[in-house]
Length: 136
Image (cartoon, rainbow, N blue to C red; front, side, top):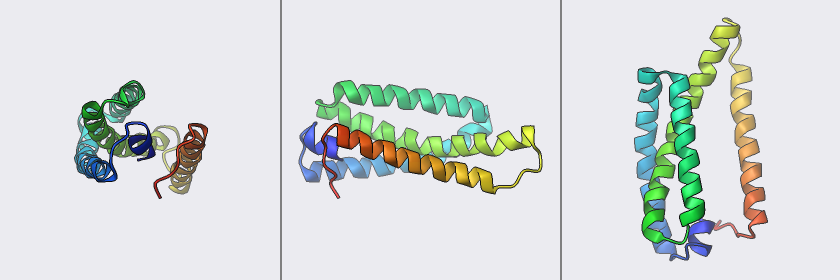
């Protein structure tokens, strides 16, 4: 949201509409994210989603000043972000069965929580480095 408000320079009401679109696309991405690993396999799903996220994030970096494109990119970011959850979970859940068939679930949960923590720290540091203020 700080990027939309301070770099794209849109109003708070427009940013709220973009967040709504992000949420709708996140729900769609969550639905498709659960189907993609089942149809194509977890490895394919993870690579597809990560490549998609890379393309969208690079596009946001270069096109942040263009509102019509940011509308599209924000929606795609929501869809891919939530598609990634199912794909990554399918990948992580499948790994131990290959290497250690009877491993406990707790290391997997710890890995996900560690990733969430690290992502939050890196995101906060990025916002601080770009001198953007949180909307919260």
